[in-house]
Image (cartoon, rainbow, N blue to C red; front, side, top):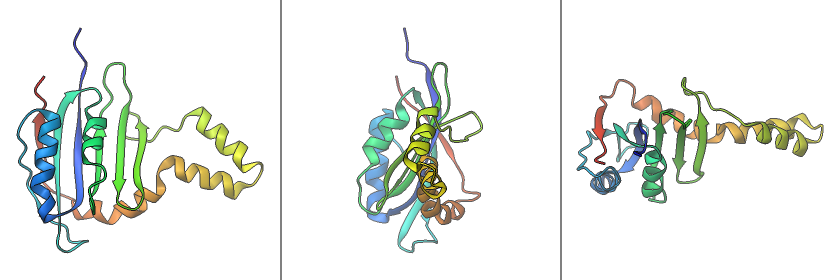
Length: 167
């Protein structure tokens, strides 16, 4: 039985120029095909580059890509994996200071917060709305969104290419 296929996008929001070829190699190693990304200047962070590329591969490829790219200094990126048969979608947001945020997403890209996470926020808040609010902010990845938003806008109208993983 074959693994269901899915697709997603890699958004490299900021990477030092010297890191760009290494990122292409790392992404290509996960996807099983050489990768050449169209790098552009990241106007929010002079001296840094940005690029986007779409991918196709088996379920779980987004997590593999995130693991491969995580931990490189000064790198900000997001990876999406679309829902596929038997699997919800996912989004990983990564910044040097905050680390990795992972969220399950629906077909429209909305973050889905599970019942147990909401119950945890209620219990931790113990009637204090500010603590509940803080826990829900963490569950929604608001700190990552705040840090990445200026970098996201810099990529508006950037070209995106498709890559297929060899299986």
